[in-house]
Length: 168
Image 1 (cartoon, rainbow, N blue to C red):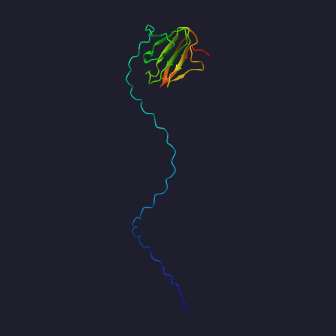
Image 2: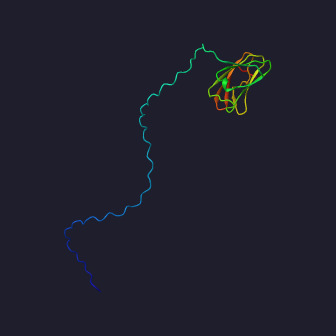
Image 3: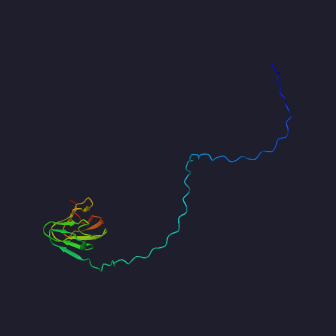
């Protein structure tokens, strides 16, 4: 058996701190944090320069007459030359006016053609092959002799009919 003894010595002064060790390797990148709130809208930018003035339009006075295209048969298909004209339709028998598709006659979108039923034969407006006719709940027929009506090209192959039309 041995006699173990513990020896307690008085402590001395603490020595100086040693030099800092080398920096360790960089760790892996952490997960991306949540997206922050959207910031306020920035101020409106300056107004751009004014564009050039366009060419003057046609004189819209009533002193200018509208060109007429008088049709006397029982069928007629509009042609590009009818743009802006008044097409009169006069026959004792029924008349069919056909609206062409773009590949048959080139009309710019927005062009009007005015129509007038001069004769007793009722005018029916029909869309030709490949064309579409848009009209209100009324028929696509002139109401009576001397009815004024017209068509306007509103999109590719698409026409709008308006005016003095028959209700049935």
